[in-house]
Amino acid sequence: MPFKNIVPVIACILAVNLYANDSNLCSAQKASKGTLDIISKMKNQPNKTGITNIWIINPLRFSESEKVLLATLQGLTSKQKEIIWINSGGMDNIFLNQFKDLGINTVEIDSVWELLPKYSSTVKGFMLYKSGNNSINAATSLCGPYSAVAIHESQKDKIESFGFKMLADVRNLTEKEVFEKNKKLFTKNLMAEQNWKKSMYLRDFLVANNAFVFWDPQNVNRSEYLSHLNPGSLIYGFGNDELEWVKGISKFQCAGIPSDWSLNLSIMSRLPVKIPNRPHKKLESSQKGQRLVCFVMSDGDNIQWLAGGFVNSPGFWASKHRGNFNMTWEIAPIFSELAPKVLEHYYLTATDNDDFVVGSSGLGYCFPSYLPDRKAFVKQTIPYMKKSKLSIVSILNADGDMSVSKEFLDQPDVFGVLYKDYEPYNKEQGKIYWHNGKPCVSYKYLLWENMKGASPAEVANAINNLPASAEIDPNSYALINVHAWSFNTIGGPMEAIKQTIDRLDEKTKVVTAQQFIEALTKNISKKN
Image 1 (cartoon, rainbow, N blue to C red):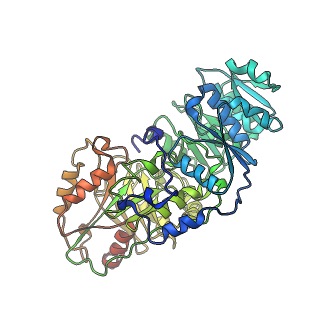
Image 2: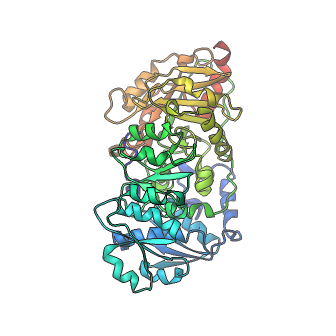
């Protein structure tokens, strides 16, 4: 997805505790009926997390080398009673407030060095790295297996003054050397590709899972690393070239989890939750004389965004327009395992007009046409879909066709598939592929800044010229992909959608993805 690797933390710095009280939800964003009662009951629940104390960190107070130390220490201690939480606003702040609601003690920490003595029995030593090369990744990879923290060479004397010993000097070792010597120590179920310049992000999660991390923008050694993994493994972080990265990992029966700016992933699963049902709006009995359109926000596979600034960005979830029209959001089913509270938050604060579908292309981001075994990938995805209460899948594919949706459409738990090509997303121009009585629908239009035919006025004009016979004509249906990284100058993608809808004529009905697929199946399926 173009521009996926944009820094999510700049989307919004100020945090909003939407659970605090109803006044934090503007009139256009009121939660579904009964939701506020549920949120109220969640307060003062018994603490079942096993956590007694949380050390709160403001990352702006720390140097880059201290952030690396902090992240690796957080990963090592993520399963203990006393944990570290990096609060950068957005969803991080919402999580923190929920921890507080459970009665867990929280203390703000000004220095990572005051934390080290608290974990002297956990930290067995340190891995020494330097700036300007991939040795930070080499050090991070070894921290989990050896119960170590990563220390920059400038901090060597300081950490030794605390009594910690150097376990390895990796300053001049390559990632490949570390991998070849220690690969038996690394998990075979996940791996990460992470730019070594991203000092703090994702590293806690990798340490907590004994995961190998590398940065290989020229794809010199990536295939060798991936061959170490079990089929179906997940690759966290993100590559230098999106198209080639996703192709490469797909060929090894892997899928990507865009997370190279993620924080606190090692902790997020510790908040217990029973994921509620997502909103489900019923379809009107008749679509006669109508054309049906559905707007879908892209990039829902991007967990760092949905677990970060997305939640209180006025261009997205905090938009003043949300709730005023039917809207569909992609979301990552991996949250059901990694951070179920993220799903709970969005489902509970959704309006009746919000709907959710699986983000590209299932459990993780892959190109189905490059997977050696699509059936296995679908089988792997389905349990996460069910836990996430999702029934419609988004597929983003490259160098293939819509028939790659068959394996999903064969599943009784899959209601339909939304399909886009890598470039352009709407290459198939609204074509519908039917299999097993279910539709795989391609995107007809794009809302995408500075792209020909993709402005609000152009999209609205095109829609108004479609047939208006949804009860009999498949050409009366249109999916619109909303590019998540566009329209910042006018207030974000939600403003672009609002401007498009304002231009639609009275024959056009904006529906959710669930309603869209339901209408297609009811009205058109038997004719194909």
